[in-house]
Length: 185
Image (tube, rainbow, N blue to C red; front, side, top):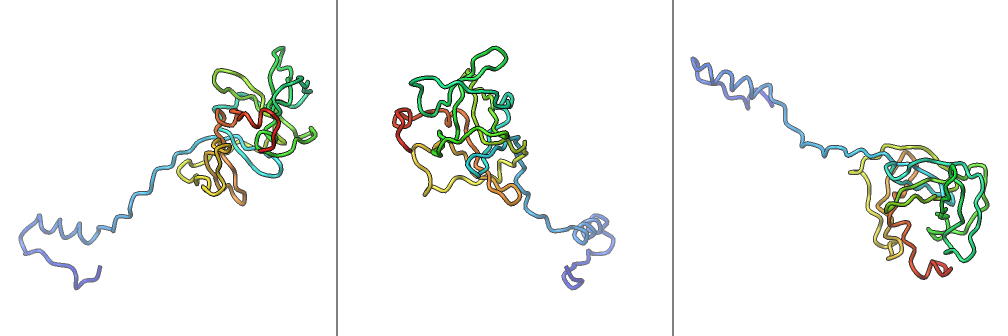
């Protein structure tokens, strides 16, 4: 604001003086930014890519001590493991997401997840870290890459230099008939 734009109040009017002072000192108001909606997610690696599940769905992370195969189990079920005396079914997330099963390695982990009142193990290549993600900054998945079988993808988040695909735990555990019978996605 320059001096020519200022209008001086008539002398003797105190209220106008305060109004004038407010006009001079007022700064333009920037539009309010959307408040952040920070959520905590567990990030993990599968086939060289980064994925994440809400930390509220992941109860614990286990080292892979051994998985026993179960005959005639759906293809996505890697087997069962012992979790402190309880038998825990283990879903191979690589297979569930359409990748080939991999050999277990020193970084392989089982995410113990709660879904629909059940505990299930989710086998991943490696756990990366726990991240705080602004849910308002999550981009929806591009419609060109989505199918009826990929409805478990919530969106994509940029974390530093990498993209992380956010998954809905209840939907990622729904196995479609064709996949249960061993067909490729």
